[in-house]
Length: 283
Ligand SMILES: [Zn+2]
Image 1 (tube, rainbow, N blue to C red):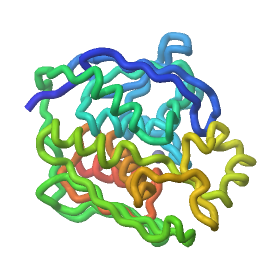
Image 2: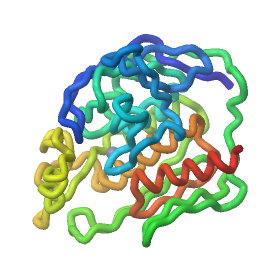
Image 3: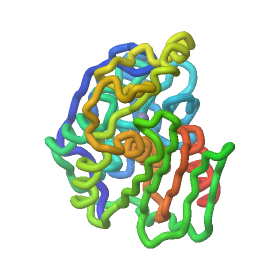
């Protein structure tokens, strides 16, 4: 068993979904055992924000790490791309408060990672994943996330919307043992699924100072008469995007526990609550 970092640096520039602020991101190879972490290169003393559960500060519509001015918002798609492609250690330099949304998916991140490739690193400490032995759950109303004992790590997700273009969707994706198969499957099946929004909520969100960077180019928008900006990349693109979000949020644990994660109508808040509960079990 080994760990991996990027073989070379990658860069992306774009606008953040909520802030509307354009930032540059540069992801650099990092030392074995250093994990995935952000560095705010626009702030004095280059503060570091680790991509760990303990650093989560907000989970409204996106996952935010850090405190006060030293924060990084909407980390989930980039982190999902790193973990999905097998990058254990990465220094993510960013010159502003929010990760670029790009096309609303993790496609561009995964393509950049695939292009530069990975570098194997010797194992430091243990990479033995936690094995979930008993069901664990968190819920809010009829939404939930469970972790159930299973022979392999699997993510299954369900959503249910009144808008008929979305309706009821379920999807399941699992880690396929070896790194190459898992990253190929992640890049093809999960990473391209874009953020989606509901037309009737957009005005309210914008009045609340949110989604200032949202456009028809970086999010699928659904109205009563269907999608405003088709075509979809998958018939069930929305629920695949929920798996992308869940993978990104649970990546804040470092390694994935061995469990079947089953989520229904959940949110970043419930994803993070589940991760926190697993962390509590470990300690
Ligand atoms: Zn998302």
